[in-house]
Length: 229
Image (cartoon, rainbow, N blue to C red):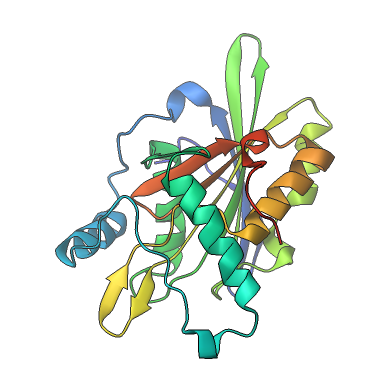
């Protein structure tokens, strides 16, 4: 678990915005997973459904239900490049990213109420110690509102010499009837646009997208072949 108590900046009406700071040695980027009962239960349920696959298919609505087919054309284009290994890499979820997934799962069980979170991870070296700051925002609906993006908090860290190491968010379970599929471990076209904007304006270095099992990771400049929307 996190080695420090977070500073809670907002907790109201299902919204939360909080910040942890700690020495990196206390929470590393290893493949060890947090011993969190609800997180373990989530992973067990996905495995039991046979859905713990590294490259889950993207569920695309039938053409007659698509208001703008070009949106899905962009998503399929990006997913194909990522799944071929042309852009970034898909790896087992690391400890910190799993810990953040577990944080949201503790708020709303992802099997029952899929919801996304957004986390900004910053770092700096001070007196020979690598420090980490994690800005975590989430709501109670599928997508977090801008009120919990926390980029103003990121700005305050950047002004004090921290660097914007990576941005992480989760893609939720996909459902078709009684069938579940893991969320796609790949950024959407709108994620690509946001990452490029944050890189230009705040120096974002990397982007990650996790589904609780696997995480896509890439430097922002690696996203060049992907379409943005």
